[in-house]
Picture 1 (cartoon, chains in turn green, yellow):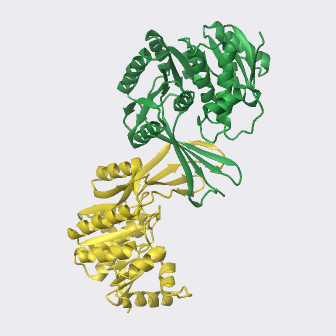
Picture 2 (cartoon, helix red, strand yellow):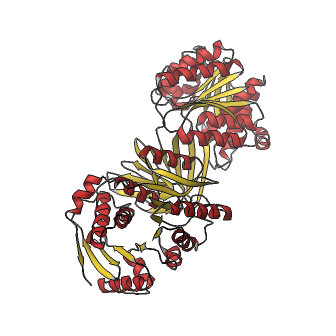
Length: 310
Length: 310
């Protein structure tokens, strides 16, 4: 089983609002609401790839119940820790007449020390029956910055491989535990190594530096330019086909899902990267995060190339 | 007991969003969420006036559970009919830097014929132990336009006085049952009588015409100009003090609450109107709909004058 952790699960809601304007009243005729948050997106794609998955993390209140019910409806197993308060609503107001996307993100619940301990115990238990535990996204209020570092250790001690997809201090701290895989963006990876260049050479050097810290895989997504990746001290370039992008939200999460499923299935690095890039690209073709199909992913894999460059 | 009916109960949520701009991402640091909908606002003010009240109507899904829990926390008794779907979210994005209020109103659940019948049976049962049943707001999808007319009859047959605060076709139809009180705005009352003038004389003629149809009381709120009201074939002018208005949402509902409590307590028309106007004015001084205090209402009553003008 693969477990995903979303420490601030959300309802992702989209309003389709033609002629959206400030200081006006709009009646929302078309809207979508899904269980959201980066780890949940990962779980959705792992599920689409037909690999057993459990979504875990923190939920709260009536919005939390909505998230659980929505996952159940999608057939995704889940085991969340419920805390006081309300899970956040992340609202995207899209205006098809202008293409604008106005986002309003609530903060979500604040954790107590007890909540944090309960979450660690839950992760430990899930890790015992998992091959991989993927931790995605930012930490909620009340959660110490060292949380992911502690969890990397807990996951490994309980026999699973830890994967970390976050940013900022939570990433810097979490990397100390040497997770199996991280997926910083290009700015983040350069910041990790203190580089002030932004060219490909600087990214490649940064990838090498991260691998030298004992992190097996580091994947840097470059959007339409594909990705650069380091795995087992080798560097790969991933080239993706030109596609009509509908939505890039969740593409990074989808890529993680492909990479983790690839690792679980014992694929070679080139094949893992191909599956990851296909999932990320498939996500960009669908309106909602992580709503990819296996057929679509398999079709896209044919037009993705992965080349070892050093 | 007074019963209030909200056929499309909502979560009323406010985001305080400085520098709100289209096509940007905003992290919401300050927000409020209340049980909302016009009948719920009425119930809140009846409760503040220390009169027993039950809020009823239609709720759905996890948002419906939120509404019930929020009412319970306020100490307001409730007995809703739960249907399929999700109760709507009514979002107000307020920008303190410009004073703008951007509103996004979801549609809410659609009712089946069975839901409508169950609601009627619930209203019948509540009417039996109520002196007044207040029906407020628009009808949800799937609810026939004659619904309020049917309910006016049902309420009266079960021994309570029906009060109707709605607009458009639902008002026109509901008036056929001759509710005790309606509260159209000035445009609505002129439309009811087909008048194309908009001066005070036209409003007074329209009020007379409505009373002649067998509706005992018709109150037309004029905002800062107070109100004109017809009761028992007499006409009254209500004059309110000049106040610093913070929020007018819910002022009409608050006025209804005062009028109904006044009627229940056997007050004379002048005193009923004074209590109603005080509740409406008190609401305008508070940031959220219906969050008035008894002290505030009693204080405001001293500066409101009601004069019989014909």
